[in-house]
Image (cartoon, rainbow, N blue to C red; front, side, top):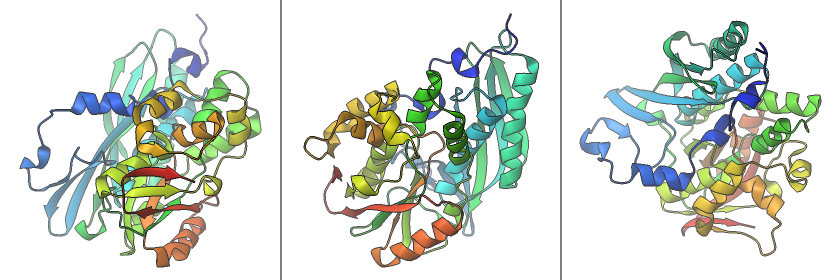
Length: 346
């Protein structure tokens, strides 16, 4: 047996590209009981938000989430770091601060060396330590494909809870990280991404979105979500649907990883990108003649992507400056919210 196979060779998909298509997820959840029979459950499944939120008392909300996936990089420690960063992001996207995590692990123990699995777990612990939280336990199984992630618990004050359903007409939209992680992942699968590109992708995907907790303290920040497997369009639509608004995005203003456009033009995009468009394309208006590679950037699944932030237009420059100062140099104002429905791209 080869003791050190490529992690990506053991998985049929990778990262947030493993997520079920939005249309499949909606079908599976259709007809489920409405959780709002529990009045203290402030956020459940009704608006496809990033995490569940339960109000304990007038000062405290508990935020709970879980996220796990198959590898989209071959280095075990990097896989663990990316998966942990991605899972913790849901807490930050709700305006909370994480307090502890539980590991979720499924490994083909007949194909991976124990040292590789230990490195995955070590990568996750390193990111949790950076976030200031313990890995307090977890659960593991023998699985046919490698799977790793976290269940994460966080806290916030009720006034700092930020849903994806509270954007307002006129709000400016800010994206904190560059798009293109799925495109880079597709290039990795085909050995077409160089070391510099891999380092850029890993650096982006392991940057904690802790700025979300700080932004939630601002009354002029109205809604936050993180952009992951459904792409900027899919997660933008969750804000649009939840808020009863249309989002208008400026294609030229969307931040991209350095080689994202080049690789997309060369055809490096994932099956998840195509599934995403099939699931929600009827709610999106694109510019006439937009080439397929640019559409692929809009539907590209982001593993541990950035935050999409809706804020009062007069505060947009100050909010953007705060985000960049927190370590997000590619952050940009990418559009606005307005009356209507769906998403329009210009």
